[in-house]
Picture 1: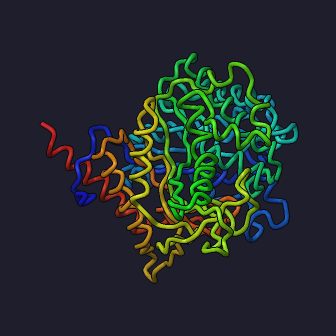
Picture 2: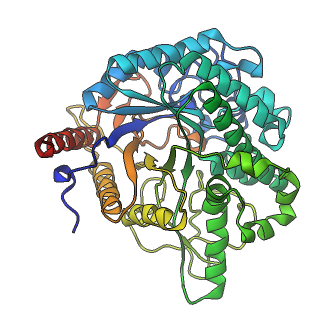
Length: 476
């Protein structure tokens, strides 16, 4: 049995943090020089976003940033993982917008003054609409435009920011954005989706090399990873479906970055969608540039069947971000049956041990694996505000504590995990779900923007405090 979470001794230097994304929290959608991102444009498409929601105000972090940093300090966070908005830094992908960079400079200064480590993500899905109109990530040139943007951000913040993440969850911004169409830019073009996968990989490698030349020393990428579990391990149809989904969700991202090659089965499966055509000589050497860390985002496992949903499946669409979606590239005969586990408000199953298995598996399968950080983990539930104004979100609190306990077990089994960032600091714009799903450990009243620390946030703060106390007691 694992040690109780609050009494466990964590590795020296273990980082406790929380995470957000610019598009989901900032608001000020067209203030300070910012112009349209693909998500601003996508929100104008009828039916694209639940309830017709948009990003124009989000949760007003742009104007309330100092208050939000004070809340981080009250929680005792070691680090805050945030993203810079490409379209705020380079509106229309033209010249640098000083006002936009100044906002992030003030944020970094506020964090450092509060004793909080800035953990910066360069791309959390808000591509300038102007670049999408030139082909977006299906256009190889976008990779080179990304490097220019990365250089601009480093020039402004590199003297104070030590940890640089190139991309957050390229699975979503490539396959869901250009393949299934449930994310911006909402395209359902298989070849464009596969081109987007490779061009984002290329942009990552190019940016890593460019930033390292400028002096950056802690560089990484964040991937959303899942265990792909066959419903019947004796059924060749289910086994093959699980293999194909593991390729799409995990291996076409992990292998090029960590091994310098695409998996052979992925190359075969995706040949009809043009994967061979977009790989140019020297690309994979660039893509596999050494990293100082790998960010792991994990929310749920995926039980996989190759049989139609009405043959034992429940039609649940796995990691999709909306109730309905078209199939992922090459996964037309994959369904997601139920294991009868509890579900979050996203209809994602709750299985904390899946995180332990994933972290151990990564260490076993990738000899060149850099240190790991859980850069997102959390849950959406239907919160209720008590008459006294408190939010007693017991399910979310337990979800977080149970998953942190699983991280501890993975460390005990040899996984080199050095930090945990809960998703999310604040309730926010949950992409295609709009404001209908709440992940925050801090509640946001969307009418007044009032912030209230939920019970899950208070429990997380207690865990952080206890981890420091345990370390102080056990350190000579």
